[in-house]
Length: 199
Image 1 (spheres, rainbow, N blue to C red):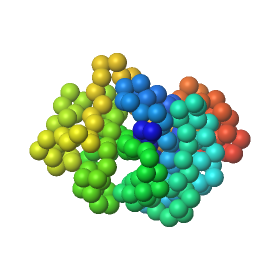
Image 2: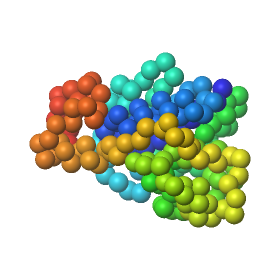
Image 3: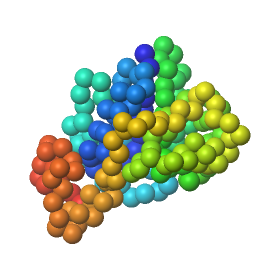
Image 4: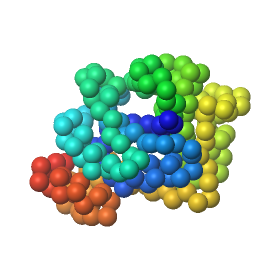
């Protein structure tokens, strides 16, 4: 089975995550997308309690999009290289792709053992907000590559639908008393309201 993993804080999950999962499934031959909320962020970001982020992310599940609590179950800071090494060892029959938003390219060199990730694992670069006309060049520059190897897939397709919806902007809207309707699924909007998150 081919599985693409979308890791992140999911604080909160939103329609942008759905856009990515749906289109990865449409344009890349994968069987499932795993949404994988971090337990504790590697860059020391302050996060909402794990149980809330996990509960909200479960509302994004469908027939091919599943939530994996793998990193949460480890109960420690999440590092991409550790996760990929461990799940590849645990699920030998599967091939995994790690989805990397193009907005992460400038900071990828800060990832733990980032060169090892490129060497040993498959990356799927998904453009954020807009299609960068020179995305492949940016990938080569950020990942310090002369050429893009087969295990690094740069997703560029004229039919891609992109969005600048982000968890940061949603939290800011809530703080400022603005509506988040149409930016998150209704169940997540209700969960946020009932649990008085991000106020």
